[in-house]
Length: 155
Image 1 (tube, one colour):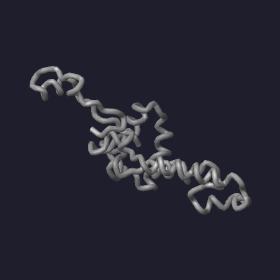
Image 2 (cartoon, one colour):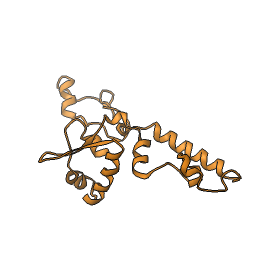
Image 3 (tube, one colour):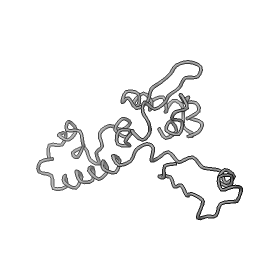
Image 4 (cartoon, one colour):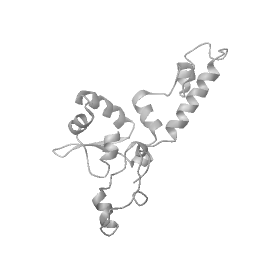
């Protein structure tokens, strides 16, 4: 998904390209994109220049949605699942003394995942120092003039 986020707006990316960039087996990626397509997170295009691309902008894709599409309900323990059907699997849930702990852990995890989008994981574009120098009128910018971009800083 991060590779598709980096490629967003440039047309479809092939699984072969993504497999090479991420050093992952293509067969594994084929399994993942089926789940992502079923969750309406990616769309596929057939043909010579086909591949996969995000169904919407990276900033509109919460990481909780990606995780649920790939892994299913978010649950540190089956009894604390955010899916009501999974939560009733354990017959001790109502009398369990640690269920509250697992529910709070799930809520914390879900909150963290809901607060991040795919765009947060896509590094910003790096600006070459020469480009900064040209913008500064030919002089090499000082550290105070040079913008610092972190992994979570939008470009």
